[in-house]
Length: 274
Image 1 (cartoon, rainbow, N blue to C red):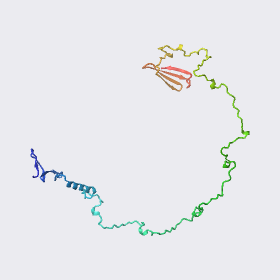
Image 2 (image 1 turned 90 degrees about the vertical axis):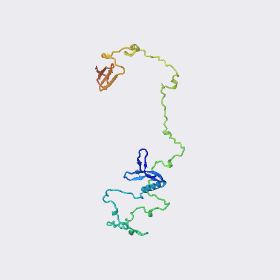
Image 3 (image 1 turned 180 degrees about the horizontal axis):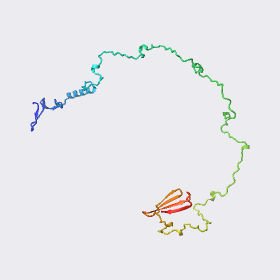
Image 4 (image 1 turned 90 degrees about the horizontal axis):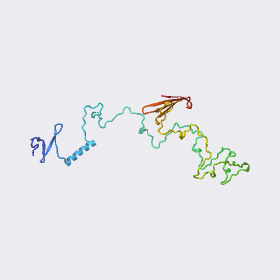
């Protein structure tokens, strides 16, 4: 077979490469070069994986492109030659070097020891031997007279008896009469009859059944006030004045201002309807 294949119908030619009797398409890259698409073989895959591993491990030289190198960058021209010795011109003095170390087992002599141990310090020479008994020479005085010591405690079960001169016989109070005792309680379901019902006339002005208004009766209030709706009374209190607002109808209200002599609201001064 020859390279390149002519498409049927249109007659256009496709760039190919004949390898082993098989045509492989040729691809044009962006830089104008071309490459041949070869079949992926196990060998090709191994090479590709090896190349990627080198790039990941940074064991392969990577191309670096930089238009300008920053001033002071560590370039190859600025590297010291192999085996070059660096001379330090401002070395710090007084370092603890190996030459200044003391030999093993060396004893250090201290020249500025603290003064002798102050008088009275607890030194090892002043410690008491094990099992030593301490004798206290400045014991507190004898126990004061009357303190509750163990010698003065009574044995268990001891009964304390007062002398007869300290015993006072208590006299119970005389029985109070009229107490509500159980003997004076009425039996269950007992009905009490009152025999001394007052037979005096009713106090004038009492609300008796004879004074009740018939159902549906219309009441005209004093001073010509209309009867307010039962759920529309609002009261506010300010000092010695009470203000009542009544809802007469759905669209009208009446305000009554009642003034008293003081804040006890017992003595009426005026009542004004507006």
